[in-house]
Amino acid sequence: AKKWINIRKSYGNFYKVPRNQTKLTIMLEQLGMNYDGRPHSGLDDSKNIARIAIRMLQDGCDLRVNEKIHGGQLMTVSSSAPLEGAPAPQMPRYRN
Image (tube, rainbow, N blue to C red; front, side, top):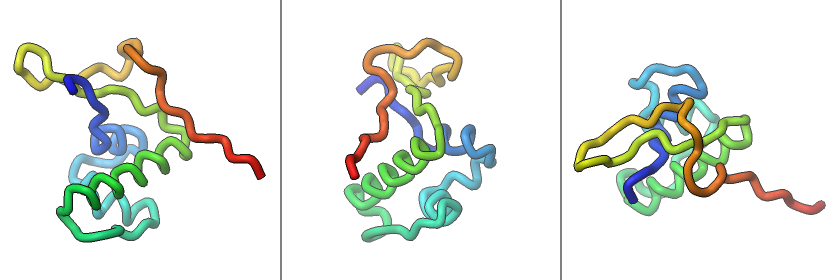
């Protein structure tokens, strides 16, 4: 995994909030969600981050790769950079 989406960065940019408002519990609270599970449990944190990502997609966010490792260094990827690899995930369409 040399490229990824940093949800904290995406959240802050999309909802126009400062970095200190992008802690997991604060993001959930601002979205009207409760923390599910035990805090600082890797699995529970991941599930909660996924819930945030789903909500962001529902709100119209275009989640893109925004960080990568290049030459052993952490780099920020410009949001105007063209998408590489797979297209952005789409919310599943459910039949009624």
